[in-house]
Image (tube, rainbow, N blue to C red):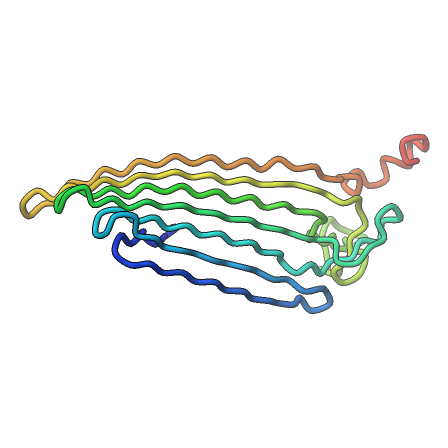
Amino acid sequence: KLVTKRADPDHFSGRFETTGNFASGGSEGYAFRGAVNIPVISDRVGVRASLSYRQDPPFVDDIDPQVNRKDVNTAHTLTGRVAVSINATDDLTADVSTLYQRTRYEGDALIELDSLPSAPLTDYRPLYGDNTINSLLNESESKFQMAQAKITYALGGLDLTSISAWSQADTPSVEDETSQLGGLLTLYPAAAT
């Protein structure tokens, strides 16, 4: 459940926040977040806008000869939201908002485990060492968009409410699945080069 703050048609306000973090054995991450609320028509119309940017701290090293880099699993997230609150009358209110989020990923945090020789089981030891992968860098980008409207009409002791929403999520990705082929590539030496 995503609970958002309603625009306030009576008070101007704003805030800004920044945070930092660090992954053990990896690098630093950070986030910036800001919001502003502006009354457009006192007691009737308010607008609230917020924006945030976050980089998660990477901690996975890639030993693939074409990559050979530390801290490859990066994720960058940008989120923005605009909300408008309208008090058309003392009995009729409307709240509309839109939200957009984009996350770009590079690298992978999926650590392969070493299998036991006698069965398709694992002893949960990382195949290439702690927080280490051996693959080409995977890249992907996910996008999420949402728009919603809520209209409320006070009718005596009852509130009639209509809520409409639309959302769309897109998550295409490119991944290196070479490790899933096991020894099959050795059967075709030209394919392994």
